Length: 222
Image (cartoon, rainbow, N blue to C red; front, side, top):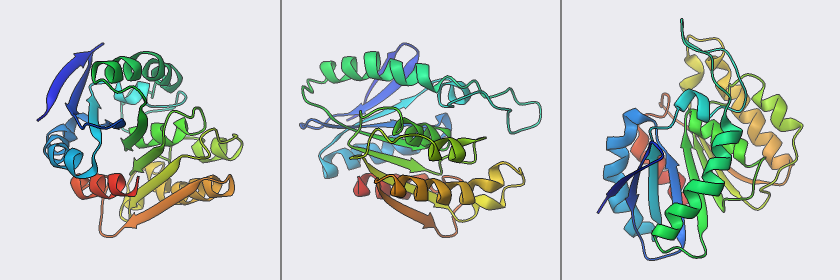
């Protein structure tokens, strides 16, 4: 059964499990209905509480620094990931987990598209998570791979799962078309730094679609 709450303007869809394992999923608004249906079944099969979060400032809260928008007349990306991660660590996570009676949380994080970028960026910033999955992460983001190559890895013990659609590099946007090269480079950087990374290039797959089988593979891997 799904419980829905709103906390500081962000909607939380929660499916409980009687364990200390909890996985936060940063869902794009357009995927929340598909994700909700899958969550009800997956939480029981994997013995993990699932918390889908949506309604954050997608282009601002999930990006590590300011960059130009990708579409014509689009606003620049806001680059507020540091602030959002701090809010998760100091506010959202402890309050959600306290309300759910989770005393010794084993946290996991799944991100999709820009939140997939955020998820991998966070492994260089904190040790909050046992496992992180990035599905079609926006690793084309300006300067990300170069930045990652120069950063120490905080979460060296974090299991990482990264998947990308093999058709995503066909984007008409020149920046987004670099996503496959940038993702492969990021995987190499993470492995070189000692991270355990499972990388899947999904056949005949576009940007994060279809999402449910990919969520399933991500959670199974973690």
